[in-house]
Length: 318
Image (cartoon, rainbow, N blue to C red; front, top):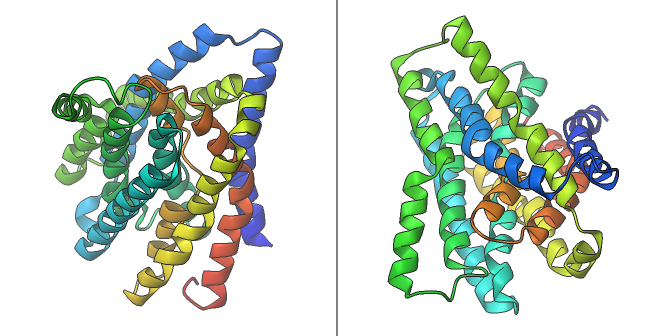
């Protein structure tokens, strides 16, 4: 019951902000122009600042574990290319392949990871290493698949589209912010001057609520129903299939405690709101992304609780 209540406390506010975004759109407080502007602000400023702060204030020198880092990166890579290959073969509407792949593998690792682990153990534990091993790849692979698959995928030669994808990866503010955050982390800078710290904190605090309000305001109920079969497949992959496949391997390799909880978040948490922001900024409609984010957010409190309960039952979490 404690795990269920904790998961609900983590996911219900997220879901309520999405609902509020939809209500604000209906009463005229939010419009399409606001959503487009807020999406750019979150993508270019708020989310990069949040990830920079998360990385910069983490002592990676003390908590470094090469095997764990490689596991996170390797699993992320295997999942991404497997889902991409399957989606190309099985999805008829090829304009949806990019969005489907992204929401099926990309978790809310940075947003939920540290919060849930700190709530359970009082410390962030191995969450920063999980973020370092997965989040940069989440973003690199997202840029790659969203550039090569989607509404404009057939425009231009493959070599030109690959160059465009590489250029987008190099310029991606989220990736750059994570890399920038490694510098103070590795130098042992534990805190910034108060003025800078408060400014960065205020900017990073905008990321999640702005993204969620925009998702709610952009939600298209009729389109979501049309996409429900595909959304259900993506949500099942995200919340059930991936944890079932890779958590036993993690346990076999000896990852327990905070290490295992971080992997549960990486593999089985809700599809991150950043999926929608990234899809929109790379020319996709975002309807499938919104549908899966809403669906996984509504269900993840129960599925995450199930995986945490199972790990506790078998003695891998204390």
